[in-house]
Length: 562
Image 1 (cartoon, rainbow, N blue to C red):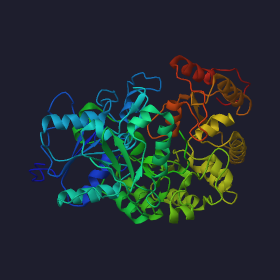
Image 2 (image 1 turned 30 degrees about the vertical axis):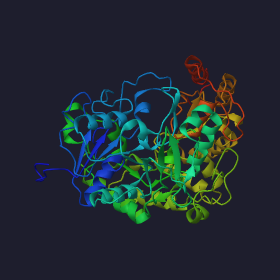
Image 3 (image 1 turned 90 degrees about the vertical axis):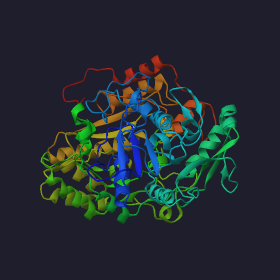
């Protein structure tokens, strides 16, 4: 501030991460966007919560405080699925998990309120706030909690990616205008908004689990900028108002954001404490698109990033790959060219682009791919070929997840896409996420059937043999998801042994995170579609046993991969 001649910041952003100046870090993206608009922005990464030293470091902002828990929900970051404290944190210098408080958005807002009385508005954002914006199940306290605005003492919440909402909100506050009609925000009102969908009240959700499912259905179905309505929920005599979502960025706007002057480094202030591990992954990675329409029930990407794919242009992506050459530590290796699901780049459903996401109809589920979704890997193939030709690129990996069922479904280009991957873009092993093989469990997860995996593995093994490569598949597997029993895990183990001919080295115990249908199932012990009771394993020891069943070592004949 002194170097720039600033006596005051316009906006101060507070984050649960160390300040990493990368387009992959939400707070850094917001800071650079506001800087481009002409605002003076300060960022406080991982402030000391036991004193005023850090929170007062930059003074008081002129317009507002922006508060984020960081790139990962603080409770997910701090605890395992069996509620054991995590000792490491990839977003903290030195890697020791000693800087991110539990429920970070609440703690940081209280920290601000403690030392700045009658201050400017406090605005919540980021994934932690976004997924807790309505009544939600909290796994760590094992109860339904109020929308986070009611517990946080903040003034407004920007949900989802929210780029346009942030720009509009900042201008409105700077100009002294009412911001309550801005799309993509939530706020508390003394009066209901009758033209919005009236959700079951917080108390009704506490009293009746089916009411909670009703509420979540409305929440889930109203996340698309084209088709969504606003939502209104009564909470102890006041009302949570969620305006309809803000528009998504178009290709030109995504390209413009990618060109912002990120240093791709940890801020010098933090460097004395050591390196941040996440930089190893993101520093030389390229985000090709936002959004995912896979709709896995245990994943919150759909309600945070959205279920419509927004892509960057090839020109923008290639320019970023070329830009890596100016960094001394760049060795010609691009860690990842991808997005939430790498092989969704470059195509979308035309109906969805015109009318928004369908209510009660998924693009893909355990049994089928919607006929309106024309899977087409051709643009992705051409992009990867062009990336390989960029000056200085020795290897460009695709480390993001891919949907193998989409590769199977693309009869025109799926085989060619996988051939490109096998030949050029895999580092010894390709990670896929079947999660399970029991059809009933897969349906509850929203994942494709096991035959899709069998068909894909045949194609993958065939291509590796043709290319003379020994590259393996590794599998993400989930234990103790709602509906899953020990018997189902024994069957999963049999399948991995007999069909996949491998010993799974890892499986994760299911974590019920806010904003997901799987968390709804865990809390209600009901299938949210049929409303019928399902088995849910809630005993920690038995959850661990489900995991141990599938990772227990078996003896294999020579030649089997493990």
